[in-house]
Image (tube, rainbow, N blue to C red; front, side, top):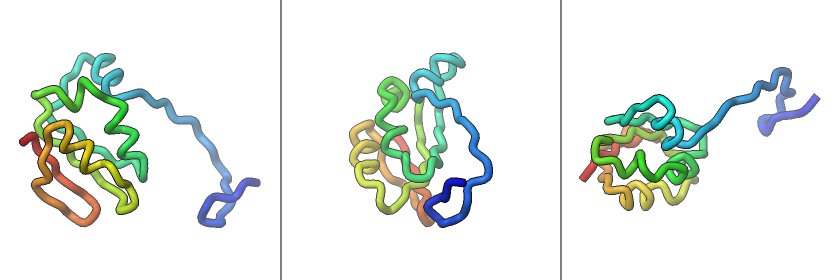
Length: 97
């Protein structure tokens, strides 16, 4: 058996399908006005794997749980035109400025 970082044995493994924000939005023909991101440390990768979606003016808000070690999210969100408007612990609300 394989051990997880916590020291516990892994008893079940499951595959997860992934796609970029842009591919997902295109696949379902949706232009979101709000995105919620809670990906346990992969926030920056999610934000950088989409160019059209975060830059779409219809996207008004991004609610994101940011790990304190995740550097670069703030700069990326500002570059996309968002302003941090509220925080709730590790959760942040960013609105289009």
